[in-house]
Image (cartoon, rainbow, N blue to C red; front, side, top):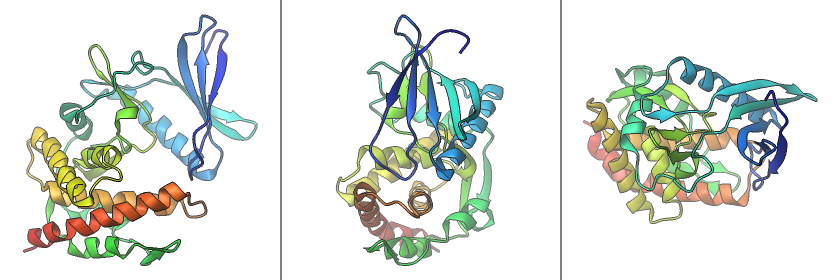
Length: 282
């Protein structure tokens, strides 16, 4: 950091992509940066992805959105460490309380919006493999049923997404929405995925049918802000397949009780989605 710092270590609950986070303070106690330490192949790949995303955001800032700056990514005792600046409002209590539609639309459009059918996209070929119908003792066949109910010939708007957008990864700054934790950032995904993820995070454990309805509505809000025709229901269904793919990948060897319960709840949301998906097919 070019100056003396003090370290605080933040430890969260056990999970597949666990990584200690160091909070860096100056000698007067002000937070100046955060450092993430990789503890596995998965967390190392996430740090690499976040470094790439931060570089991209520095080259092409998103209007209305402020991201941290990458300070360094390098190895320490064979552990990958990523250091990024702290954002001004990150330590405040100014988390967004309603869906920040304009900011999510700006992120989605940050690399341009293109139109394509689902089956012509790399995204669809990634998420359509839902794996076996049972996973660590859970019946997860709902994801296969949902995949089969989606019309792959439907046309969607494709853009970028933060990948883990939730109230605790953002703060309302003076002139920007401050957003951090960009390790899941991707391009060429159905526009509106961030809105569906937001709903899944703030509604977790809520009535699955109500969550599904709200998820579709939130995705539609972002799609409408982009001014491109797309189905919020198809986007929300694609989100469910995507997050299920993420869970299967990250938890191949390590499954927590919380992740099992969350997966079971998402299966119920997927079941609630089936009637709407059947209506979208020709």
